[in-house]
Each structure stands twice: as C-alpha cells, then as structure tokens.
Image (tube, rainbow, N blue to C red; front, side):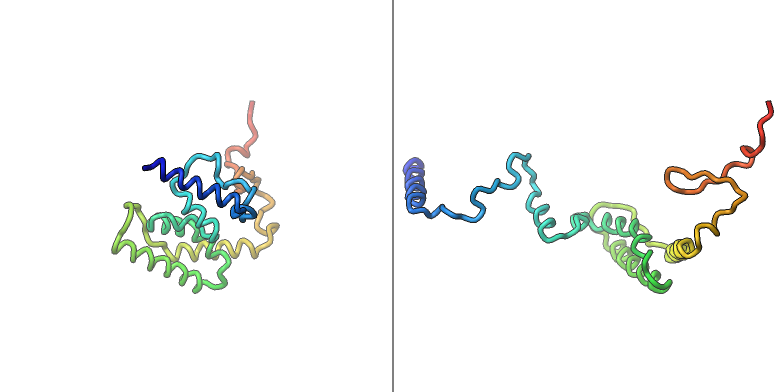
Length: 165
C-alpha cells in the first residue's frame, strides 16, 4: 500500500516538473538557511526575535529580567534631566519588583527594590563629574597612578619616603 502511495506521489511530482510548475520559484538557487549547522530546538524563537528586532532578554524569567534592569539603572538614568525624573524611574522599577515579590513566578532569585536615594546620589555625582573640567579636579601636589580600569589611585604615604640603604 505504501509503495503504491509513493509511486502516485512520485508520478505527480514528475508531471509537475514536466509542466514547468517548479520553474522560477522564489528562492530558487539560494542556499537553504541553517543547512550544515547542528540542529537547534529553539530555532524558530531565535529567528522570530531576529526578524522582529526584539531583545533576547524577553526570553528570561521575570526575576532575571528584573535583575538585569536593576543592573542597567545607572545607564538608564544617566541622561534623565531632573532628580524627580530619576526618582520616578526608580519608583516604577520598584513597583514592578514589589509586584513580583508579592506573587513570585519562575526561579527563586533574590531581587530587592532599588534604593532611590543611592541612585540619585550616583546620578548627581556623575553629573557634577562631567560638568567640572578635568584640570580642576586633579590636584597638582598629590601623585597618582591610573589603573587598568581607568580609576585614579593615590599612592600610599609610606611610598613617598625615600629609601635608606
């Protein structure tokens, strides 16, 4: 029975090829995307995110999304114009965090509300650092070294003393 079925299908395909129904199809002559690569079970999710230009953070569970947003708070508030807008942003994030803490779903990950005063303090420090010229902030008398991270480190007082020997 299966052989008869296969033969009937093959006959229809041969007839369509002879009639030219497979000529000039879109994508003809182009390689099949993903051919030769290992099979990925979530290929359709990845292709959807890429096609719609969505961030891959949407695939994370809620507590991990919240932790990622907490880590990105300094970058997100950096360009906000006023202290009140910074506090509003942190307030909205804390509302989402508290809502998740009331009804936790997904993996148990420690997520705590963000301290608005600490974020505002950092925001102010960042703004004043950019407003003050670089020559006025560095004292001429204190020797300093620059680390790999770009931070200034003061030399220890005992390193300033000349060595005896």
